[in-house]
Length: 459
Image 1 (cartoon, helix red, strand yellow):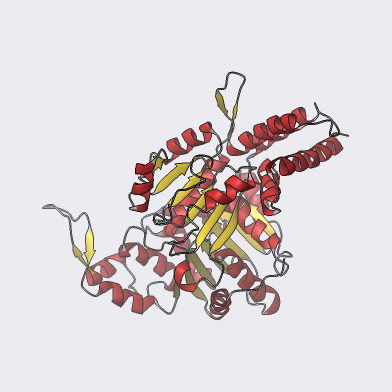
Image 2 (image 1 turned 120 degrees about the vertical axis):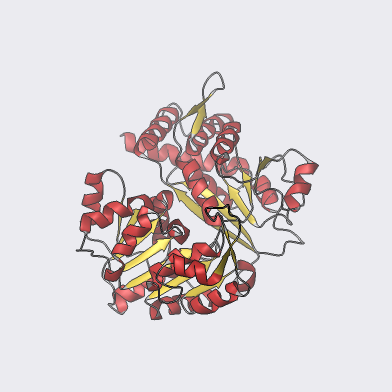
């Protein structure tokens, strides 16, 4: 696909090319990844200013997102990736594999710094979701700080730079400029711009900004931080769709392939009917989501890969509210369990009171089945992010569900995120929805394609 940048994207690319240190505070869905990849390609292959690029990201993002995004565009598909995940042996092999971009999860930053010590080889570092480095007390922040002098270019990406307050900015900005703008210590930064708030006789628990502190801080960091909200800068139609790729771990991938092979080899492509196709694809979609119903209709959990990707997506959304569509009852139960410790206000849609509370901003995550709220509801006041945890074959349900937010009265562009397992039945559903195929037509075409693939592999 040919990439034609929007005006704000072209501006961000120019700034990345001109600035050795830059933070892109772009709201989720504005294309931070393709913008950064475009700059990396220009810097490496046209300007010869960088050699080895390191991308630090949440685990599920590190597994697939950057690689898939680069492969999507004509001008970046040639970029070589090495994914630094897994066991120590696999990580060592990955960092010693020739590549343009090395992608590592944030939990392995300490290991990487310790592995190279004073022989740090990455002249450009990209921190995807920079709020992962908002604590100067964390080991990962201290590790990256120790090699900051060896990094010629650094880029920070996030849509929520200060989720808990302005104090979160100091560690992130320090990694950009090593203390030039906000001070070399968090203590001096705190003393200059904050007053004690909640405290007892011995210690201070929280701080509040002094009068004018926010404006002063913004003026100091404005030259190295670009902040954009979708409603202010987005030169796009009112509804944007994106795919969040989900990579299965080895055990889950093995289970998926086994279920697909055993189920599909029981049927003949020429004789399958809609009933057979529905049963087969239903099982495969369940496994993509992470669990499968057995003969007694008990959910058997297979993996947590999509749950992990979902939690990372919510983290990236920051304080933005999300309308989340699920497919199966076990999806809903596992999502609810995963969200228990997040502190978010979570609700399963059951009726008018939930609609009222969502629009009043009292719900952070609203879970719904597309069949339960695809028609008639007005949810546009409560948020502008839709997350499809599990997909539906029904084009009508899909479009109508999205219209709960994308409708008259919505003041911000609606961004629709799809969690899609790579090379799984999820991907086939997305193809059907994108081609606007009807339920039965899309389902049958997808299953026939999988049968040909599996039977070809089995020969």
